[in-house]
Amino acid sequence: MPKHPLIAGNWKMHGLREAIPEVLAIDAASRSARASVAIFPPSTLLCPMREALADSPVRLGGQDCHTEPLGAFTGDLSAEMLKDAGADMVILGHSERRHGHKEACEGVAAKTRAALRAGLEPIICIGETLDQRQEGLTHAVLSKQLRDSLPETLEGQTFHVAYEPVWAIGTGHVPTDDQVVDAMLLIQKHLAKRFHNQVVPHTLYGGSVKPDNARHLLTLDGVDGLLVGGASLKAADFNRIIAAAD
Ligand code: PGA
Image (tube, rainbow, N blue to C red; front, side, top):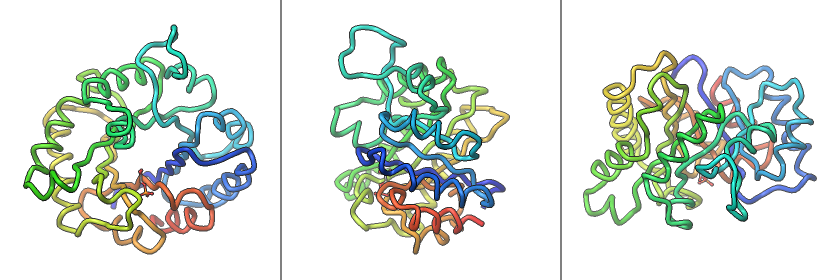
């Protein structure tokens, strides 16, 4: 396990203002935690959370951003807007964007450049579908996603990569230890070959992370953080995941 694992909570399209007490309880646990903690709420909660977390170690991030800083793009948010609302990170290329919104790797790379332009630290997600794994395509898919979603401009920048097998997200199915380690090492090899960053990227695992499996996942080779969906919505669960990194 690395010195400071990154535990990131992706709230997806969940959370109203009444959820602020949850984030205050997460803040309380984060103050004595070994892990760095980040929450990615819906964008509507960035401002109120930033205010509520004024002097907190908990970082905030967006769940997506547009490539342009401003313009006639109804319904979209730019990286600069997320930054202005209190984010300093952003998740890009999540499978729910790649599949639900037909985002291609090249678009993810363009969004990553936009995030860096605005001073946001990106977490870029990759992962294979069940069909791709069953057809023996996992390595090919992950390598292509890494090659095409990570722009050269990441050289020298702080960023992170999350391995999230699509079939593990929200399903309760977690890959075997060997499957996780195999993917993490592929990612780390790719990153070491292409980038020479002072801040070594965290490689995160995501997909059905729960309080009961977090500690074990964090012991696996190459896993230096977790991207948590459903189990990040309640402080009672998420704080146990944060504590698993102690
Ligand atoms: P899950 O989601 O933890 O609910 O499986 C993970 C994610 O999509 O980031």
